[in-house]
Image (cartoon, rainbow, N blue to C red; front, top):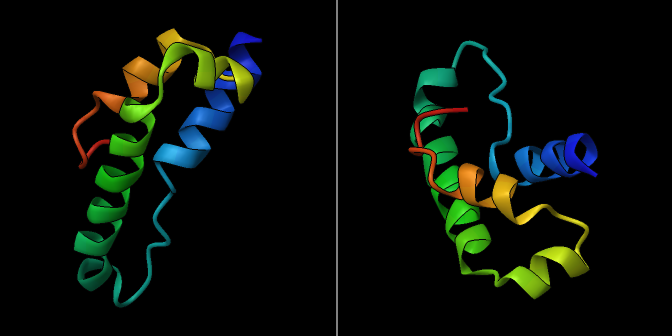
Length: 70
């Protein structure tokens, strides 16, 4: 469950930026999205995480990352 759950959490919480000509203008939007999604992860209780097939330890690690880290 660890690897797949980790990938699911990372995909949900930290979308990868698309670097192009206007990427610097979109960077604050990406940061806000990461912050929002990570706060949603942090709001889940252990039972909800397990219902979604997520490992609570991995969710906690992802939810506590700073918004600027992928």
